[in-house]
Length: 103
Image (cartoon, rainbow, N blue to C red):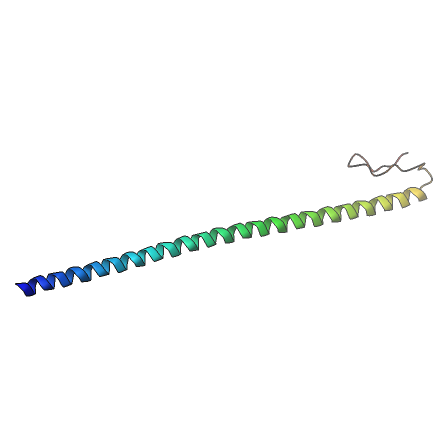
């Protein structure tokens, strides 16, 4: 009977060791999953910030180009006005309400 008891004790110890090892493994996997999720969130935030910066840079480029084209147009209108004998004086650039010509 003593052999039988020893066998059960050994089985219980082995089962306890397996249970502890499995719990540690599960805990490690949970920690790794949480760390991966945190890295994913950080990468997504970084990607959104990079996209926002790209859009902002693109908008600034368009504003600069529009201003340059507007200045070009103002210069061309001024040159045309200087050649047109019917134009007395050209007013400065007028936003979208007309072409600034008199006459």
